[in-house]
Image: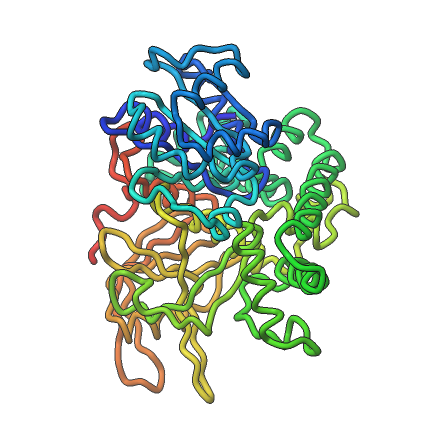
Length: 471
């Protein structure tokens, strides 16, 4: 299955002064498969070494002797590292041999023509606990999340629907295309973006088989708890792990998670799961200017899960069949819609930058206002509201527009794409707000998912939907 990140790998592989690449992301999002497919599709020789199988190499990597290390790799793989053109040396499960991470700088300095990629499960914990000199400035990062909806369409071979989404046509709207995309969106909400789950769904179209994959991934995550937490932390990790899917997007209050636990215990568990990539934090920003991270209130945040398919399995959809699910209304449909948008927006920033996502919250004695997400487009802040149906109040959006004097806002719902000028009076405030509202179907979030450090493959603007909008 093709991943958009392959375009980034291609850009990295052919650029001048390429540095060793470290792929970071949660377990089972497809890091190793990404590298293998990239090499296969681009006819690049892959020299792969799973360091979990060769932990004894850690002492060799300690020597920092690149010549000796390369000789050992050639013996193990039975492949030549000389003449490195059109070759990739891939260290998989690099966390099992921590000294190999520090050694990446010497590959860069002594063998700059050799393309080196590394990846590993729970790599964040190895990186945070290292007691050696990190190769700062000598390596690059690629952050990988679950497959997005556009990649899901690609895997389903929905070429015409992909072309339709790419056109961004607000004038011509196809009811047939919208209906088909809405049904596929429903499938994605159930199946999610974990590569194995999507592959299983395409092969069998069986929800039971997909749920079996989900349950296996969930069990793997839970088994990992013991690898990065103390025995006393395990119960709280399990509690947080089950809490987040059921209360997606709620502002975190530690007593709501466990009223009998100390805040410090809950906070530690949350931070461990964030580091493992299992849950994602959306930070509360004042939203006054760029960068959004400069005005974060660290005490206010909300959480979303890694993947929407895993969310639904944890919440119990395994007891229903696929056809029933396509027609049923989820009790937490609003939160599910937010989860869908959140996991797409979270990985919509530069692939080589650590993923971040923000929201806005104004709390008062009598009036609260909240914007689901804040994103930056063309160096301007755009508030994003998510609605699970075809209608919904935009009172909070009006308050944000009034306070921040924004000129553009985005709403995701089930309606057809549209742009409209809004001029509305705010009750009790004796003022009007004027802005352009861009309304998009939920599935159109994929058009905000190409904000990369390079242009997309057609050389188009990374944000065509907002090209002609006032800011």
